[in-house]
Length: 291
Image (cartoon, rainbow, N blue to C red; front, top):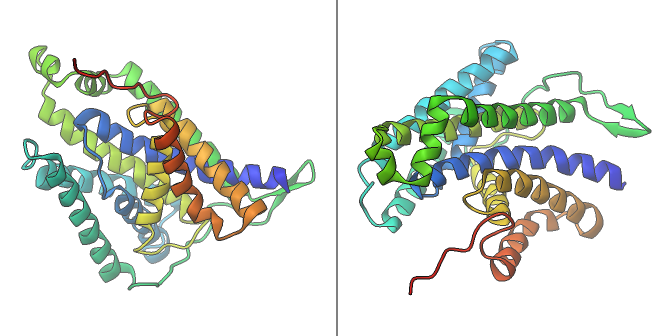
């Protein structure tokens, strides 16, 4: 039972890590949490569903549609929410992103189903389980895990080897210094919000065949990703990856050995425990106190 739970936890943890990376990406550049991030995940999954089921496209074009569409939606959120409120108090940004999440949820219900309605999406590969060392594994789980790892490696290469990635990193380190060296910070913010949304869409596309889609799935996913970022450290990309895998494994083990309903509670317990024992997270740094 333990190997099966670990494989399941790694699969869901990889998706949590992807969504958490999007949260951290926006936070590091703008110092704000996008509370509509879960709904961007939902929109990405439903755009892929639209391409595969409604339009009858193959998975790859549907994935491209979902990523591009959600990337544009992320840019819209920058223009409509972040840019007008860039100098407003932090609470204004929180309320604005929460309001945007409800707007996206309402649009999702209008286009793809009402409250409590669930939609299934066909698997990417043959759903018949395969056996590795006697352990039944769904091929879709392997696809999800491989795709998530590939996306993480691609993001690491993007930040290290491209001018845009280095500009994002520089802006995250110091906005004032970025202005002084000629980086167009507003444009970096715009692409950061778009990139965060696109990463959420990738996670939504690969999770959709494993779970049922619903316009209301965004909040639970945001909660798991937020737990991952708190566990790993809110400003740490590596921490988001480790935290995502950890939350997925904890959730799987809690459901297998304690109680099934305990899976959803485990994310709250992770957040509370980390905030009490190590508020900066596993890889975060404790802010210096002013004298």
